[in-house]
Image 1: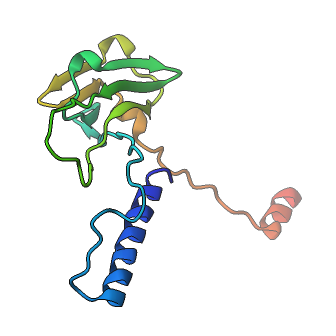
Image 2: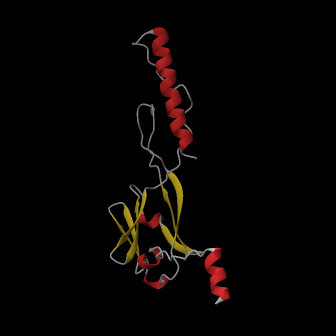
Length: 163
């Protein structure tokens, strides 16, 4: 829900731009965004959770994040990944028209299945991608096989009692 607000603001800006062009002609384009888009968009890293062999693998894309700024913990049965993507200020001659890259602190909670072995969990950070492997946890994710319960009728119950 939180991120949908930014999409709605962008849609509204495009519609305002279209309205201005329809009123003043196709060559008119607003020199600045109609709405204040300076509000910081939170950094939410892309996270994939999948099964590899018998292991549960959590892969998090963290471009521009220093591995020293990462913390991976287990809290209340969840894998918690915390960190920060810092914005490096550069001296520039002009101002940004639009800054779409997002920066700041982030926190991801991934619930883990019961029965994982905490000491065997490994985290590896390579080329901006954090991969956490939870050994032999995939088995706990398999759904139980459905069990069929026979449906009896009242006539069958009465005949059984009579016998």
